[in-house]
Length: 124
Image 1 (cartoon, one colour):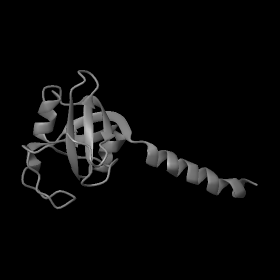
Image 2 (cartoon, rainbow, N blue to C red):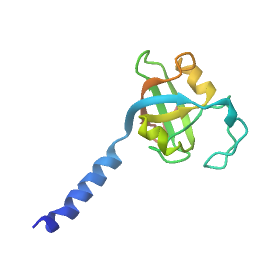
Image 3 (cartoon, rainbow, N blue to C red):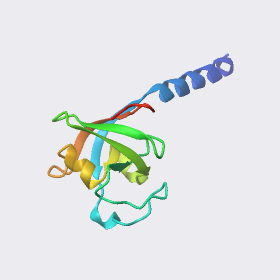
Image 4 (cartoon, rainbow, N blue to C red):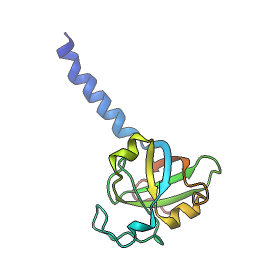
C-alpha cells in the first residue's frame, strides 16, 4: 500500500518545492579575494555589479533580496554557486559588494534576509 502512494507523495513534494518562490536565511557578501575570478555561469565577478551566488535559484535568474531588519531590498542576478559549507551555516545568498551596500549589509557582515524569485518580464 505504501508503494502505491509513495510516487504521489514524491510528486506533491516536488510540486511544493517548485512553487516555493522564496527562501529565508542568512546573507553574506563576497570576499575581495574573488574579484576578477570566473563564476559558475562564466561571468567574471565584479564587485560593482548587482550579482549574487546562491544554491537555491537557477543561474542567471533574477531575485529580490530583502534585509529583514531594515526592509531594504535589491534585485540581483544569480551568477555563481556557494560552497556547500555555507548552506550548512544557513547562508542562502552571497551578495556582490554593491548589492550588499544597497541593503546595508557591509557594516554588519551578515543579515537575515528573504530571497524571492523575480518573475520574468517584471520591470525593476
